[in-house]
Image (tube, rainbow over all chains, first blue to last red):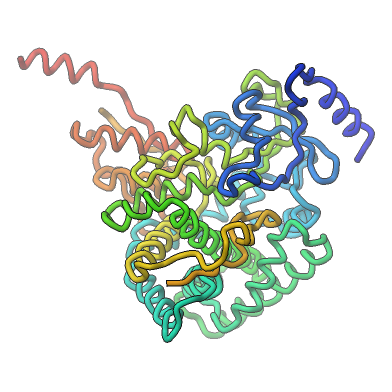
Length: 418
Length: 77
Ligand code: SF4
């Protein structure tokens, strides 16, 4: 920590003026584990910040400080405002881990760049994930889901839902879309885990990233010799990017395609099993599935430590002045529980209109793969509930290994029986 | 209601298509929004407002000609 940062940290710790009965609110430590009471709820400090001091200070793992933005409207404002940069190379950009800093600065992908470069690169992929195309994948995704469940249930009545269904389904689909051989899935699932673990050292992240980069740039070279209709091949054919750039983009898609939907699927299943009333409603009326998936996205918000930005100008937000060069974390999970937008938001309600959730982020960086994620989640949850009417958790709820240690929340395993 | 889109701003994540498929579509080549109906019927107004509200790139704007509609209605009555 530089002297300037230290002074800043001290000033902010001292400035909150602790009241008699409440512990000083800021700065909050981030990343923080979710609530002990209900592991589906955001960290208690973040919830309290939203109610009492919606734009507040936080201390990061390395002792540096940043702003924490917790309300729905403020989160949308920051993420939609080009004065908040996503460029990880700018001084003041807040990183959640040493590995995250390594990942974002050594070979940045477009999610850590600003327009116009971000838009130029992203637009090379928007056609691949558009709603129509993803809707056309439904029969294929359905077939994959059914095959996985056939295998999972053959002659057995218990399994780990993560290993046998929730993870392989999106892995198979993203491999198919990219043109990556699924046979190599253990290799990239392992590297993916390392890249997303809050415990990984910078060195581990560097190695995992280099492995994936090498693998994908070799794949790009192979596609040049033998093209197919996958995304990697099409990026090669465009001729605008070199193999290294294609590999960076491929790496982003591969990782994003793996961990996010997998964790949403497993966590959604668990949340429904814990809310039998909601589960019964959804079973009785499967036409609720689309809305239910939006509600699960809102309620669970697996990007649980927030999205990082850095101010490029002084900006006033929620009565506070964020100075140029100061980092900001937009906590999506707290925004998605904002009572002003989602009344009774701490409860799961599959009949709610949850479309305004920010689980996919907001602004020009909003998740590119969301039409795919929606199709996958709708099919995964609907198929699971339909085919396994007696689905239940096979271990005590207290023993479920939640991913407090990962950038993407979820469960490491989900033993179920039927 | 008059709908405007800004294709320069659009980031192609398609939320608008999900909210109001009668009004918005995405271009085959690059997934950028296209407007199918600039003056959608009243039954779609709520969906269009929703689409504008959830568009992450603020690429959709809705011109409030409701008063005008009302005036017209009054005239007709
Ligand atoms: S929701 Fe907005 S950004 Fe997304 S496709 Fe529609 S207009 Fe473009």
